[in-house]
Length: 311
Figure 1 (cartoon, rainbow, N blue to C red):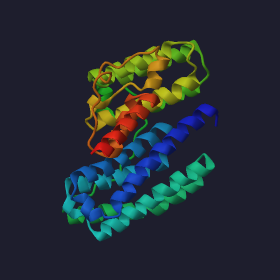
Figure 2: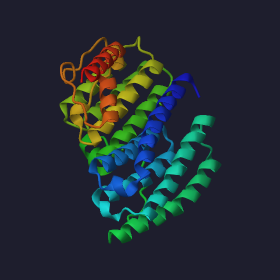
Figure 3: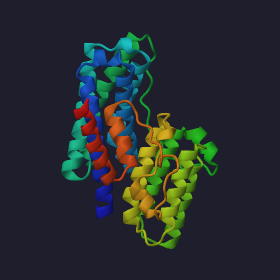
Figure 4: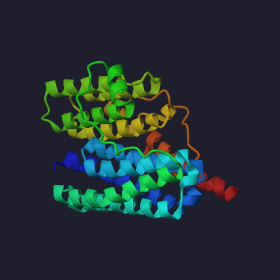
């Protein structure tokens, strides 16, 4: 694994661990959590984020287990009364399998086929039991486990999004983008990357999303920016933005300072003067970190401490 791939993997593991911490806290008192719409949404978003990141990196076992958890949280989000101590126990079993996969990846740098096969064989019965338990409690029909498709995208972006689902289309294109960055640096390969960015841009008419892709394209078009530099910054920024977009938070899609520097100092007009901050503290911290330079964050932290002391 080269330095570029290692950096992207480390970013994924770091973000996944944060999401797993959120999930674990919510599972400790699942019945109470399910009655709080914001908390159960937070669990759903965390599982969704892990699934998307794993899919982008081709970590199909992590993607699969996170997806099963996400499906369970979706049921609780729609039918909070189906939560029970039995469901909590099964959720925790599934969560442990996901933790094991991530820990193995962090320690070994890869997920061997035999290891992932064993984990999936052990986890699927627990998830099937959970699925049936939730379905019976809510008198719903259990849905079959879904396997994400990695099909070639159609030439027309709108048709692609319709046929695969916007979430799947974004994930597939991000994975394609990462593969291009891993290839040998050539003018032709840079053009392929720009073409993939255009496909991503065409998936949504949201101005902030399209502006972000324009800035990405500007950074990629600069030959002085190496693929190694671009991969970590561009892919991570787009992954964060796609999470916000898919969760209905298009107004929080923003250009990070690192991406702006690669593009030649571009300033995002949607976040330069006003930043939308979520109510949940962890989400608020992430939004701030994505919108400000480190020096600005230090000033902000100092001001917050001063306000707390005065209060």
